[in-house]
Length: 239
Image 1 (cartoon, rainbow, N blue to C red):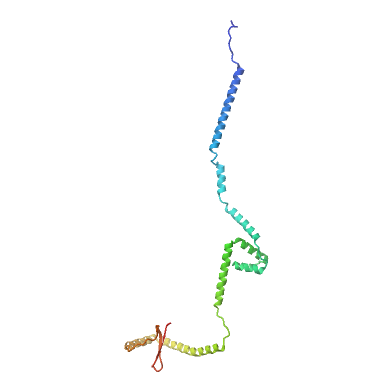
Image 2 (cartoon, one colour):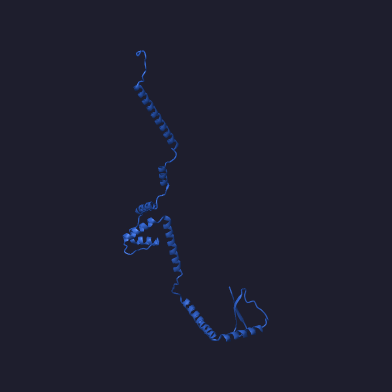
């Protein structure tokens, strides 16, 4: 009886292998899913810069700092200074400094230091600035020359010129002396008497009537004077 009844017992080894294979397959599936999701995420964000990339781009786009720019400018100036040829003649160096409107000599400065100062000065100036300084120097020199031309100068004249000037002095000096004397006498008279004399003159002029008229000149008259015998009158006009 016992031999006829057959009971199938599960194989523990087979069950364990099946479970291991199932777990392994699940792990592979999960790994593949994670890898696929990661690849999709990478493809989706390929064109989007990360925070580090954006910061790098932002730093590259920013201009150089002021100290870096100043350092580069100084290097460039020194490179230009090495390429500038300056005359070794101290007289010519002073002339170039004078053209650039700079002091030709500083305290304790020798020819070598002066030459180096000229080199550094030229390296710091652009071509336009140098041309502007030279043009201004030429204008100043021309202005000084114009002033020099206006200075009074004397030369040896002829005998005829000496005689003419002597005659002019003899004619004008006594008359100038007489005019000054009359002016002093006029100022010495009290103002009350001067006013009374002017009023008397106006009263006499109002009593005079016009008898005739004569054209003295084509231009307005400036002065007139009677001859000593009162027979003629001399007039002058404005030109």
